[in-house]
Length: 110
Image (cartoon, rainbow, N blue to C red):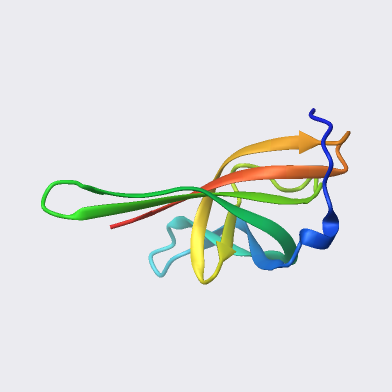
């Protein structure tokens, strides 16, 4: 756990935490979906955004860092919706003795 200065006054970006859930389709098969867990105001920083050619198309990758208050329910199986785009959580770092956490999330788009 890292100790660093965090100003919660910088939590001005709105995100939606999406939790995994299971639903049955019309054939009775279970499929993984996501449902809204909660909405938060957080600090979002872009770590990296890049485009690269990939087999006759361009793949766009964007990685963001989200700093927010600690929530023990959130794990790497959750997703984040930010600016109407969905990000997969790669990593969770606990900060200031579990007062805060930093999430690294990635968005892949073709």
